[in-house]
Amino acid sequence: MSAFGIVFTLLGSLMHGYVFWRAASVPGIRRRISRAGLVSGAVALWLVFLLGRAYRHGSVEVLAGWLQTMGMTWMAMLFLMTVCLLAVEVVTGFGLLLSGPAKRMRGMALVAGVVLSLIAMVQGTRAPVVEDYEVRLEGLPGELDGTVIVGLSDLHLGDRLGRQWLHARVDQVRALRPDLVVLLGDIMEGRGALRQDLYPDLARLRAPLGVWAVPGNHETFHRGDLVMSQLRAAGVEVLLNRWAQVRPGLVLAGIEDLTALSRSRRSGDPLSIALAGRPPGATVLLSHTPWQYERAARDGVGLLLSGHTHAGQIWPFGYVVRLTYPLLSGRYEVEGMTVIVCRGTGTWGPRMRLWKPGEIMRVTLRAG
Image (cartoon, rainbow, N blue to C red):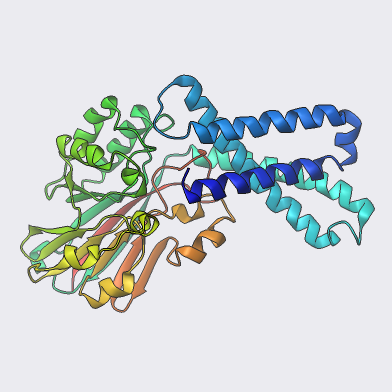
């Protein structure tokens, strides 16, 4: 298990113990559920969480898929209940100032956590919305003014987001009549190859200036080369530390995932490699992780498109994500360069979101 996986599992286990420890002090729960019953329920749900972590990548078996879904959903519910309980701890001084009311307030916090979880489940199953951006690019020829780029990030195609979901997303993209389609990494979920039943719909993604992709951290787990070759077979061009001139005056460049590069402790400078020797004109850079944006701006990139952060996916987790990824979601201006970070078209882990639904970006380019 990776260091991230170990920390993730440890935090989930700690939240699990904390929630059940506080639940045991709630009068209504103590009257209705015996201590043995509460402990048995806690152990059973903890095992579901652990089994979901163990089967989190690569399997298409029905049991494994359900375990993964239940485990990650339970993890998200634990997070929301923990947040609500910690708010009560602050108000009551961890039960030292208002010991009597604190026990009843903990029950209310648990209910609030469950309600927020239900809202997140509904939000997470909604279709992604189209967010419109207009970007003026210096060096873009006048004849390319009005070029439309449609971007999708973090599809996480797999057991939970499969063929039916992808078919609907492709219909959304086609209805936008894009000139250019970009896939900003984490196209597939887990460590396995791309499912064969997804090919027909991926092949339906078409645009006059092409369909382009960069890898995300999920494409680099074990079988990234295979996934990239499968994408090429479906008609998707992969930009791996290189550039391509889609029209005279418009360059599209793409780099490997910087998060995966950092975790692997490999050396390298994919940004310099990807931008070297490109022709004059406007440059649009695709990078799954929104890092090295100051460097990209200084190197003459006019527009950077990224994903990866999911905007935290479940509020208030975004505040934690922002510590590592300061550009969390939406539009930013960095030293004359525009950065747009997609909050994710699909979901990672549980199909839950608070508060905004998934996003498909429609970016209209304007001549500078």
